[in-house]
Structure formats: C-alpha cells, structure tokens
Length: 517
Image 1: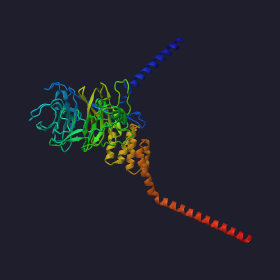
Image 2 (image 1 turned 90 degrees about the vertical axis):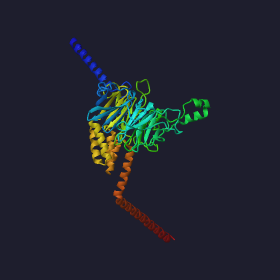
Image 3 (image 1 turned 120 degrees about the vertical axis):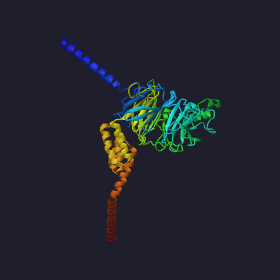
C-alpha cells in the first residue's frame, strides 16, 4: 500500500510538471499585452485572430559589423538611421546621426558596403546635416532630404551637385517656419514631393526645375457635430483660442508606386474613427490630391483590428510608420507600436500580418522604415541600427503567385495555386475568395457563389448571383416563354370553358322560365 501511494505521488508530480511545461509553452504564444505572437496571422469574418503558416522567414541581418564599418577607414557604426531606399540591386541606408548615406550592394544573399555618401561636389554646403530620407531615380540621380540644412539636394551618380529644392517663398507657406524636409519621393517627370515637418497642408510639390508648385493631399479634418457645436456656441473667444484648433494632421511617411501614385501613412487620428474608415491611416493619393485607395474588404486597412486599452506595454491601435508597395500593387505597412507588418492586396484585403517587439531574431526594438527588393522585405530598426531582411516562405510565395496569375489573366492557374494555399492553410478566406474570383472570370457563376459563400464575401456573392441569374435566364429564355405561352393558353381555355358553362346554365334557366310561364 505504501509503495502504491509512493508511485501515485510520483505520478501526480510528473503530471503537474507536464501541465506547467504545457502552460509555459502556451504562454510563449502570448505576449505581455495579451496578443497572439504567432509569427503569422490574419483575421476571420468575425474579427477573430486566425493563426497561419509563416509568410516570411528571416534571411539575414545587416548591421555595422557585417558591413565592416568597424574595420574600414570610416570606423563609425550606424547611429539611429531613419530611412531606406532600394533601386535595382542597391540598398541605401540613411545613417542620420552620422550625416551620411550607406550604399549597399545586394547580390543573392550577400550584402556588401560599396559606398559611403557623405560629401557632394560643386556646392557651397558640401556635407549633410541630419539627413532623413533618400530617393534615387532611374538615371541614378540621388535626392537627399537634408533636413537640418533646410533643403532637398539633388546630385548625379558621381555626387556632383545638380540643384536643390528649398523653402518656398509663396504666401501659402508660413515664412516663420523652418523648412525641414523629412521624407521625399520623385515621379518620372522629376517632380519632387516633400513631407515637411510642421506643415499640415499636405505634401510640398516642386516642379522638376526646382520651383514650388503647390500643396497636395492635405489630410481632411473630421470634427464631430458635438465638438463643433460646443466650440462655436458654448465656449468664449478666449476658450476657443486656447483650445486645440480643427486643423489637418501631418503625414508620417510617403512612398510612390510604379504608376506614380503616392501612398501616405498617418499616425494621428481618433481611435473611434478607425473601424468607420474616417481615420484613413493609409491613403493612395492621385495627382490632384484625392485618396483613391480601394477598400473592398469588410474592414478598412488599419492593421490590427483588436487592440487593448489598459495597463500594457504596447497598447492602442496600429501606427503605420512606413509603407512599401510591390510591383503587383500589394502594399506592406509597418506598425511601430508592436513591430508588425501588414500586407494588403490591391483591393485592401489583408494577406497576412507578422512581427513583434523584442530582441530575438525577426523582432524589433524600434522599427522605423520598410523597403522591398523583389519580394524580399527590409525593415530598419533605428535603435538597434540594423536592417532585418525577410524572404517569402513557400506559403508566402504561393500567395503571391496566385495573385500574380490572376492579375495576368490566367484565372484557372490562379485557382490551382489557391488550392495549394488551402492545403497549407485551410482557414485562409482569401484563398476561397481567390478561387471564387477565378471562377467568376471564367463565367462559372454557380461555383463562384459557392466559394464566395465560404469566404463570407457578400459583395462578390451578390455579383456572382446576378450574373448567374442573368446567364440562367439567357440560356432558358425559350423554355420560359414556352411555359408562359402554355400557361396563358391554359388560362384562356379555362376562361372559355367557364364562359361556355355559364352560357349553358343561363340557357337552361331561360328554358325553365319559358316552360313555367
């Protein structure tokens, strides 16, 4: 009996230890603010987090050590870099606190420092002063947002000075403000668009010759009726002057896609406005400054759909500090709050989300910029002064391949790849939607309706149903008319028969009356 109790005690202890180990393992999937840290996830129709296979994996990390900055003549490590730019196979890192730009050549999985850009030729001010951004055009001309030199400077590929873009003398620009460009993009015509600190009228637009053109894409002001009435009718003039003015907010970052549209992110908004699509943290701006971002999903592209508001290390909604756009119109936004990346297709549908804050591989301390080269992603951490390179997994590559096949008009091939994706992730609603869209393009409306139903895509289901109904009517119109004609003939026969019966009855009644009379 004692031996039995002894063995029972040992068994209970083992079960307890196993339970604790399982609990600890489970806790690894939750971070301290309550969010799942499954490396890749998405959301279902009911806004619940759905884990998925990894869309990306870490390929390598680019830092001062593996760039050889400790060994060459520079001898200076990166210090709070602020921006990235990719042109062809070159990666440009804006090393802000060291007043220089690092040009890194990317070949397969090797990243080699090829040039340190810190001085230009033929200009009175030949060095940079806290540069924040860089852009390189197709002719390899380099534009630098030389922030504390109050200019955007343009040089050729050999670093010879060409021109600079400075503070506009236009009356629309407050002359009391310093001109401090933080982010820049350049279109194919050489027009420069600058995001300038403390300017909330939109982007500052310059023509190719350096002359100021206009402001474009100013954030619209959203004011509640209650706030407006309270401020206009219940506050004194002094209170109105002291309160916060209803003014547009500044953009956080900008990116220009291959078609010349500017994607802009903003991090200043009311949390309540997010799900109602009034905040618009991501915008796509056309040439006249209008937001034309397509949003065909149930929720707008805002990053995390659920967030905590309490005593937490990281709380509140996603704040998109940067954005990059692939050649297939998929855009990826970088969240500085939790260090996550959110991928969306050209319809505004979330493809995946992944990333976290921390000191492990693939995590970030203070993410500040994102770029891409092909499908590889580069994420810059300003505090750690390093760039993490992510490359797609087989699952991520399949998602991209399915989207590309559809965009190229190969709908059946797209559906076949989406079926592969479903084998890897049976909960992926975008795969159901993708197959449905492929069937829709092939005029297989009934099959499309089935997949749209599984994807909870009411809009596309309604479109497929209308086409299915129209197609059914066109195919069966002769039978419909035939049935209608038969029904009409039967109705006429029935009416004629009733009329004849009525005439017979009336005739018999008249005969009876004559006989009785």
